[in-house]
Image 1 (cartoon, rainbow, N blue to C red):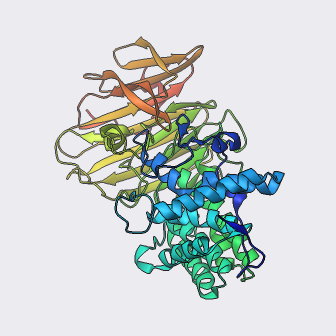
Image 2: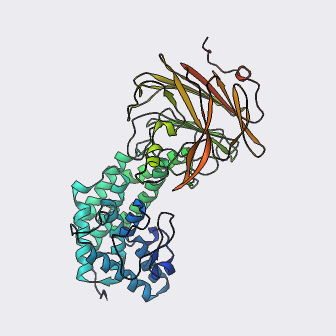
Image 3: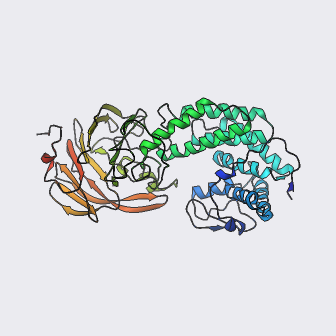
Length: 505
């Protein structure tokens, strides 16, 4: 049995308020719920190889023990000894049932991220109970966290590893571990977040996660007694501008990369113009700050896909009058399914796709020109991801909320793909136009050439593990395709929009 500690080796920095919310009554009954899935029964004696939903996120969360960490927090808040005893029992079961390298142990038990998220739970527990078994496990966790071969530098997992190593080092009185953690988290943050605040993991949602975890890291450093690195704090502050620009007028993050479409961001401070080009491969623009009816758009370019990014270069998203118009297939899950893999392909995004050539994953895209006027902006981008130069010109005009795109290839043909918000449905089809609506709301797509334009549906991820059917419009194959999107009353034709590009003969 665990027994109450009278002395400690070092300070217990408990971060229990950072553990995900859990229903304490459910956990006390032997039930847990992870990843938005229904509660699962673990019972009194826990099977650590359990995976009732065949879900990677569920299996990882089981082994983080953060759900048991919430019992420690409940004990600290209420004094209910039963909560502490159950947390201690769960931890002991885990330690005895999951020896590192043991036969039949789940691969998630000692996965580097599970170790990083579990170690702070054990530290919190050690503030109230102490046995040699728990102390030995803390030491084993520290050895894994300090191992350079297992460290994920420049990655959100690496940041979690650093936080865990710091609190374990402080608890066990190992100043070298604490100091290593502070050095690593500073260097890692400068690898992960550039001077403009862009996280290189290529998903705004992960920028939000890293911002929150950097806040935890700075707090832990301060509580440890070590000096708080100014460079670390500066990178966290820089992230706020990137996240603010990536936040749509409805408060949700642009669904770029592994960013669920329903992720909401806090209102980070922002200043400067409402349009910004980030060198790491993003254009974010809006009509105005702090206006829920503002237009908002994103354009992707830059380095090839990495980590949580998608093959979305040249891709565009668009909101107008406070509502989403163009979206993407988005992020569904981390499951190894055909659909999850498809959401990362070019075809899941609003991009031009040449009709010949083989796609080369990871190809970089250049932003060749950007003209940022107060009333309209225009951009030119190009790459050779299909072995032929595909060029996209984008024009955004604020007065009439116009988005116009001109796609071209020097030889052969291409098709332009457009995925619409699931709320929009086709209400009218003309030779050169499609009108979509949602109640009284109307959005018109005009396209030249109009021959071969196809209407279909695509499965769009609207949240983690949730999907809806959405309208997709695919242009006919042509060397050049001109597309215009405009909300409100249907314009008569493309000529009436007075676009700046010369039309092919």
